[in-house]
Image 1 (tube, rainbow, N blue to C red):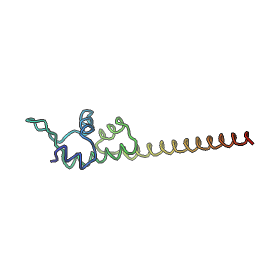
Image 2 (image 1 turned 90 degrees about the vertical axis):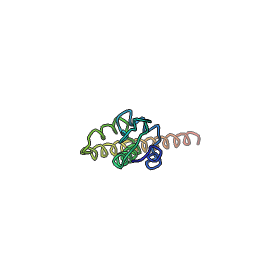
Image 3 (image 1 turned 180 degrees about the vertical axis):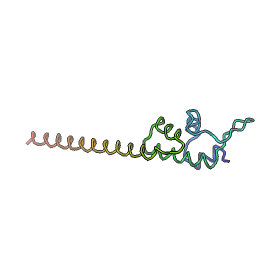
Image 4 (image 1 turned 120 degrees about the vertical axis):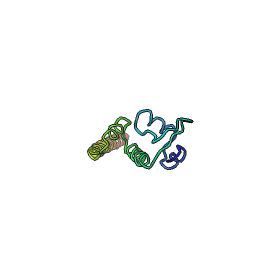
Length: 114
């Protein structure tokens, strides 16, 4: 079992984030000591925390992360990751189009000044 301070150091998640994740039932402590309310996490918690860190880094919303965690088999995780990847690809394409529009606008301004 890991104390919350140890778990914070291991995962990179803040105490506030861990408390919030517990509140929304995303990642609950493995054990809460009834005498002092200290939270303890185990190796299974560590695996889930690292998964959540990765998902957050991939741009998953809290609701999307909850959906992944509710599907304990992670059967649909690959589908969700592919959807996220496709959405990012569309965003990249849209940003590249914007860059082209900006470049064209700048070029047209230079032509007008000549």
